[in-house]
Structure formats: structure tokens, C-alpha cells
View 1: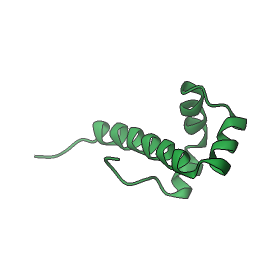
View 2: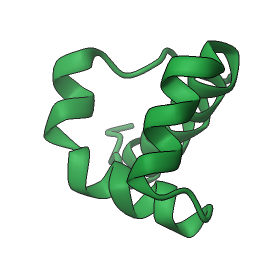
View 3: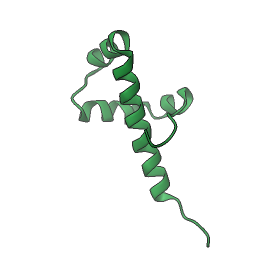
View 4: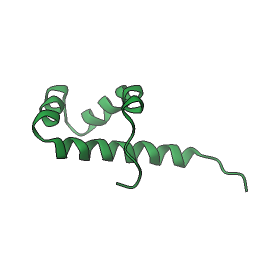
Length: 66
């Protein structure tokens, strides 16, 4: 994990993007529910990867004044 995990409110605001992220990794809503219940470590890993992807996108769009 390169950055901090998104907070619960941030994840809620990005719920559509997260759903697309899961779908792009062939995880449907039923599978995600099972992962959250049965494999907390895997769920945390998925959240960390999604968070890193979001932060990478945010940082790449940032403009700096020199």
C-alpha cells in the first residue's frame, strides 16, 4: 500500500467507482459480500488497492506551483 486507505465516507462517495473496480476484477456484489464476511484480509487488500488507484489518479491530476 503506497497511500492511506480511503475513509468510510470517501469510499461511500466513490461507491459507483468502487463497483466498477470490483466488476473489472470479476467480482460481483454477492462475491464481494462473501469476501467481506469470510476473508477480511482479502477485503482489506482490495480496499487498499482501490485506495492506491484513487490516490494515484488524484496526485497525477494535481498541479504544483514552483
